[in-house]
Length: 474
Image 1: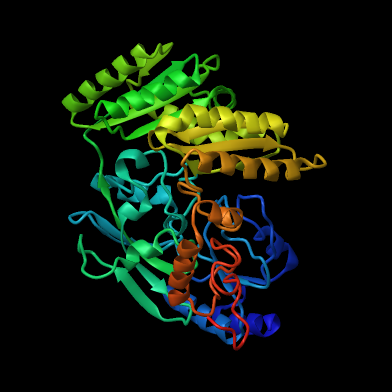
Image 2: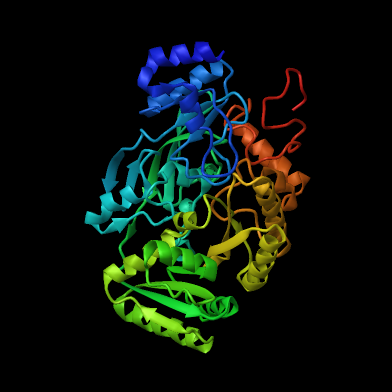
């Protein structure tokens, strides 16, 4: 089956677009998460027509298809759990059309997130979703996981910035979901596709909404002796009716790592660092920055610094976005989690997360989108150490259970993928899971797209990770 499919695709697309050497398969065997698999072959389409042809060929040969972007995903969403074709969209990287008047752009899924904003900057526009992996992650990956980023508090996640998607179905047909109209009639299938993690169709083009550059920005760097003071400041800012562009927090261990790495000017003796950014009209941002300052002072901030120069503001955000790279100083490996808890539970949750780290003998570092309660606990470890990976996996389970018990959810922006699918019953009952499985089945009745992801075994009457046996009741 695999040999015949490889031969057909090489004849159709060319040798350079189809990889099957064992070393290549190993390189593409995992994303940025913990889990490793091995695809049967890797294909690099250049166009929608290529993707449609690949889907038709894969269907003829009975081969499941797993879509993949830059591989920056953190939940095993692009990992093969059995024989599968890995469809990598990074060569589909054209920005096809920018419409400055309507503030939209049609782009292929392999366009790098940051490249899109750089390309549209001469028009005074940018793509608002800005994950920490912005310089590497693709727009298609952002769509797959409904990525958020540092400024999602005010601007919203990817679903708020996608107007339409061109999709190739499992049968190899091409359709467009959504449109340029701000409020199209009918079911919001575009919204269903965003965040579906490649289980409903292959996104081949995206109509994104572009955001105007704000006329003024004020970025504040604040430090506190205790994390509780920083969290109380966050709650106070929101309670005062402000919705800043961003509210980002780091604990001391993370701040130390970042400062050693990026030299961003973060105080390493602080128990917590809080970054706030307000945007809008100059008079408005000055007034809002003054309110943020007052609230921070009321909660005993040891440092309140407003960035004066644009270079200083960029250095602060470079420090924040360098957090995950900075931990390489501690250990050669890390496991980054992604959960959401109510803002009022931030302090209690972080304390319990620290306890999880201590219980399993792991350095637990924390950086999070404090404004919307999106936590990113990071476990630093050495995978070569005997038993280390097992301790990390056990800690990850405990961490998820802590956050769910606090009224939280499994993911804010990284997705469920393979690594969190077995935890879905913690937040969804049988009817919920069955409804999700039925929706997935409506798009992909044969279960050939990204099998074994999101839904656990038993979500329906059969394991939706693989097609049902012939004659099985569905």
